[in-house]
Length: 81
Image (cartoon, rainbow, N blue to C red):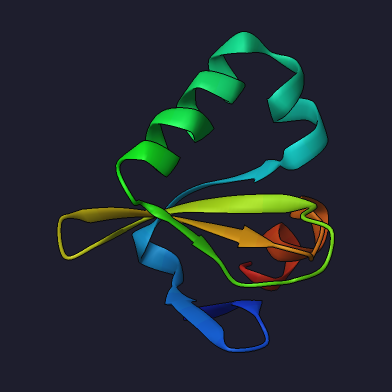
């Protein structure tokens, strides 16, 4: 099964490690550190120009990627079921 993270991004649901709410995650120091380290390592794929609402951590062929999305984490999770 596949999940459409954004208009032009589709990932295999078996590769998804987690889907996270941007507001809740960035409140904690650990969440901010994770995103900062992912940014420094070039793992973040910003797939939208809109306000980011969530991000999905995906492991594709052994490579971790973080997809930023304007779709809420609840909607992404429902789409992935």
